[in-house]
Image (cartoon, rainbow, N blue to C red; front, side, top):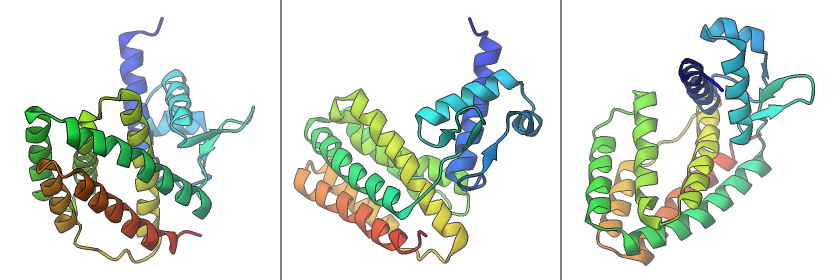
Amino acid sequence: MPTQTNQSSTQRTYLTLRNEIITGKLAPGERLKVETLKENYGTGASPIREALSLLTSDQLVERLDQRGFRVAETSRHQFQEILNLRCTLEDMALRNSVANGGREWEENLVLVHHYLSRTDRSDIELFEERHKSFHMALLEACGSPILLRFCGQLYDLNVRYRFLAGRSKSYSRRDVESEHLAILDAAVSRDVEQSSLLLMDHYRSTGAFLAELID
């Protein structure tokens, strides 16, 4: 049975690797050698392997039969598949959440949006943490933990493409703050149709732009 220390090391390694893959610090297709990762992250082989297995389940890492691991590849086709799935599943979750969310859900949504709106975009790590928190808070009252988990995974897969596009080419900045505020207002007004329309437009606007930047 894994010790608590080993579990903590695995979790830290998993979160660090996950962040470096999503933000593009580790490039698509890059080999992930256990010995190299041990040295880079100052931990043992066991937490590294366990973290890589978890990331394989997240579809951020690919297992190469007996030859180890690599960062999952990217493609325009995969990006479009992720976007389509995200729109389908989040639309379902959002509709249920807006219709059924109670006062606690509404107050939390307003709070996480407040934190997001006050975050400097140049603080990339904090901004992305709060950006995801806002989008997941919208869906929180959907009543399906499995659906929420899928939506969270698709968020991570999608945002990875945004980072990759932003690192390689100029990334035009829309007025996303206004878009977020409009989505928030529709959600707390319990306008299911408007919430859905605004969120889907939000995703598809970004998707249409990023699709042109993906090789």
